[in-house]
Image 1: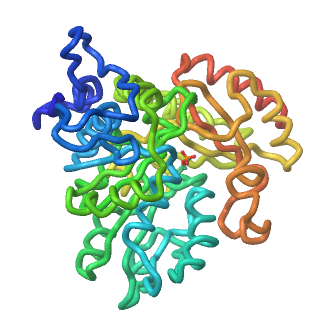
Image 2: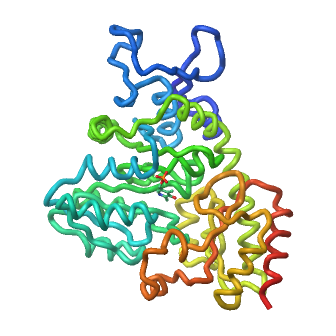
Image 3: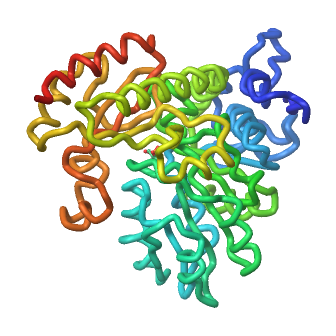
Length: 387
Ligand SMILES: *Cc1c(COP(=O)(O)O)cnc(C)c1O
């Protein structure tokens, strides 16, 4: 198994970190070890079983992600939600209190609204990105703070270093969902966050053909997560591990392009008189641009905008897209577009949605790696619907 050299850059880690050596044929890739039964005693020196998170394919790809996030340890699981729910199950129990940012992925919102209370875990919500508001929400029994930055769909940025400092001083664990930024653009652990979760379904795999997730962090914390995952059972198959490992080899390359295209599309829309508002942390006029510059190396391919006009205008713009396909999900090589009000935030009452700043005209783009000019042309022709 290749250990990442500490001086390897991120692109080298993407390609080489974690690879499980093929000692039989000398292949340069981690083989697909398609076994659920392994001999005891075996060459790895421990009992090997997929649900225990220790078949070679799982270990290889988990080590690659851990190396990219500067984490001591990591695991891969069968979805982003499996990663997120496993963290709550591992660290929170009846009587505990948790603090969550309100701007969260819809599935995480649902988990905290429906599942955590059922287990006797009290939940408080923070409606802003202000560290003072997080501090005000803390109680003596607060166990964990959970955040996501950039947030969906308005790309708000939270100061991770300041949050981690506050939490440390109060003995509270911090968990950050790094799906939108990826380890290429941001490393929350380096800023003092305790655990990072990912929906690997998105940028990590990057080809919109796989559902998976990951948790990474200090060895001592991961030692509490792994037994929970083994008992609840969301393990990733050797075939999916292979796909994820293959996808990850080009993560740095893909993100460079997503960053370039994201910035080009955001700048184009920000200059266009047919556009009301653009939300992209890379734009100087974004409300949290200064924090973004301080903690991110690139701003990614996710952005949202409102064309001028009413809901019908926005619907017509969406229908007219060619390259931007109407689809939820994100982070793949192809460009996608959706209405958060109809998808991720459909269950939020319209009045509350409005208060959050998520209007019915808001279109979220996942900007892919196509030629920049082709994407701008597609947006330009779709915006002809704005009169
Ligand atoms: C998609 C997503 C998730 C959930 O991941 P799944 O792989 O769909 O379970 C969690 N967080 C964010 C930010 C996401 O975009």
